[in-house]
Length: 219
Image (cartoon, rainbow, N blue to C red):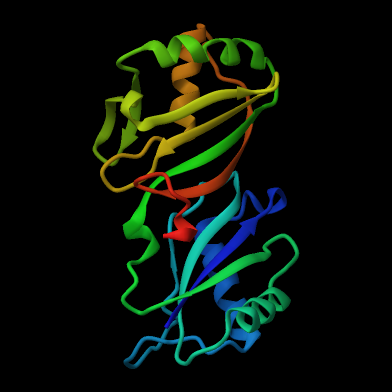
């Protein structure tokens, strides 16, 4: 038996890195008293997996992690025990019990939705959205381990729209085959708008999605 845990990483913790987040979750799971499973061998460790790490500086509303269990426990009891062990800025918002054969969340991941609040000079970026969406190809420079690489992100933009006068909602590819980070989309919008340096933003990952854009937590 495994438990899918849906949690929120609030804005105040957006600069906490993924490794620190993992350690915080591991400590909370141990404190909670839920029957978590450990690896075998001389140095047993908790077999905790996340669907996708959050970039430093980004908050998340419905993040997904998978916790293997050593024995059965009800969803309600698991949720209440874990919530009591987590800080207010890192709440457990939902849980779902699945069979051990259920695919890992990372294997089902296909995309993610984001809400990007533009802190200053939002108008030109907002105005550039229609022109960007009309293009068949949107080339940006993507930094990779082997160096900078020109990449067409247009096929990775599944949805893009303005929200009010200073925010953007978008759904972007997020999987092993293709990933478009919000920073690349903002670079493309800045290029389209003729802005040399894009303005500061606050980015929140609002939902993780499967390949068919169904919420990951439901797959």
